[in-house]
Length: 75
Image 1 (tube, one colour):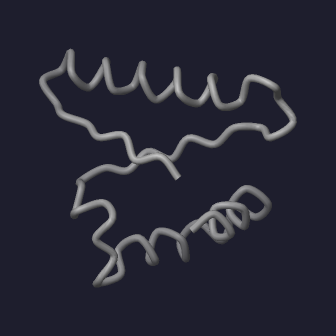
Image 2 (image 1 turned 90 degrees about the horizontal axis):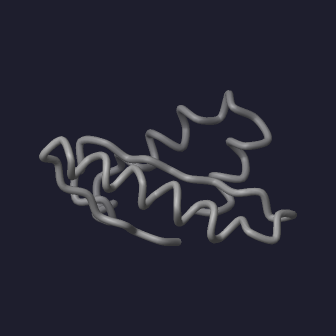
């Protein structure tokens, strides 16, 4: 999956192909979730891992405050 995400970063026109991959039958990683958020960080940044984790955490807290559940899937 990581090579596919890399293609999107370099060429946003490839996003529809990635989205169709995620919707492919047999792809049960996301269990038919109604929404998928992909958080990308800059590999050159020393704090990229922490920045992405904090962004995900804040989104999960915001979802919870609105009565929605969320699930962190790290790749």
